[in-house]
Length: 65
Image 1 (tube, rainbow, N blue to C red):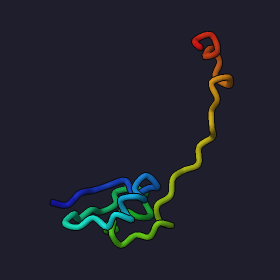
Image 2 (image 1 turned 180 degrees about the vertical axis):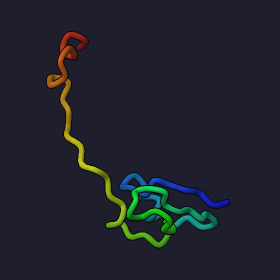
Image 3 (image 1 turned 60 degrees about the horizontal axis):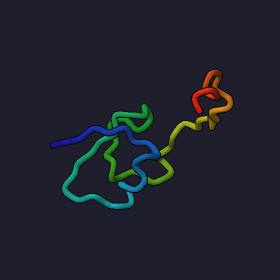
Image 4 (image 1 turned 45 degrees about the vertical axis):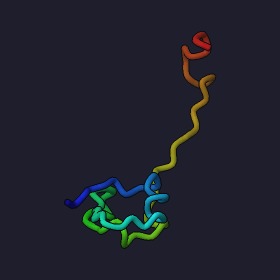
């Protein structure tokens, strides 16, 4: 059975594990859609950068702690 994955940085360890017996294809991101997972390189697996949010920056959170 084929499996469809979001091919992003969260799958880097799986790429290195070289899983056998699993056929997985990327459904996202768009530029990787349809590619077989085991053919990817680590540099293909990217995540969007997010800002680090500190609890002090979130209004109303300081009274909880």
